[in-house]
Length: 348
Image (tube, rainbow, N blue to C red; front, side, top):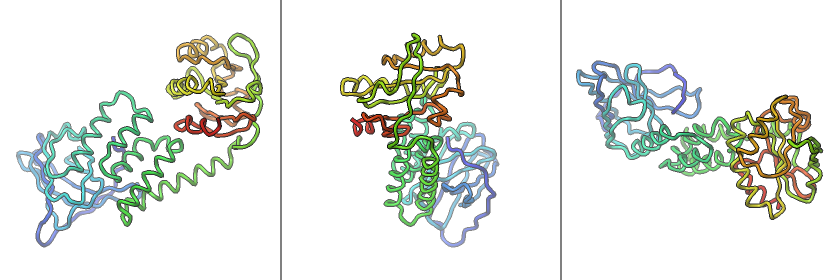
């Protein structure tokens, strides 16, 4: 569940009285080496080795240190197995038990750390989830017990489509800055979000379609052969939706579009769907419209796949791609997905 690269690791020596302990009893780990490290957001930051030990014949080990644990993400390596978890600053004696074959799935018993227990519970729920939709991801993020845990879950679960979830990253950054203002975690996460904001600004600056400009005309035949024009909907707020029957993310997004359409169709909202289906795939296009319940009339396509003329005009390089158009026929928002209803209410 946590994807982090391997790094070079250093050794740690302890002197003076021992005040903090991490110990465990792990089945099938007899005589294996154990390494405890602390990790950070930045993949260029090398892990900090907290301590080393050797399992005894029963798989028992103890890592003792003088310095207290700091709140953060940790990695326990036993032989070739790795387990990621989080500890809190108040943790003093943390003890785990389990089996080597399943510790990487968080199948462990834990005492001495409420933070560890919370993290393990949420991660196991993630692993059992049948599908990780953006809505499900946000639900798991909200279950994080600390701002740092929620920030890690945000990066892990929404990082692949961070551009669509910038507000979630900004919210996590603010909460982490307030909770751990002088920490390396807060500074690294802030740098990550700052880089994301800059990247999105650059993308928007070079985008083919800008907010405020007139929406270019689209006039193509629908499944029945009748030509439908985008301009005919002037006076309504329109969601221009580029999609295709073969596009899994598009099909996953369709239920939300249908929900919003049914909720606001009587208030001046409509949808104009442009399919990027392949030549000769009209039947698949029509079947997807029916199966997904896309009940609005405005379905058009030239059935030219990525050579679609409207897609070129609108600079569409990936789908789903959406544009919200105001009553005057101007672009109101580009790619409103998770905030579609919010943007629609503003436009209405």
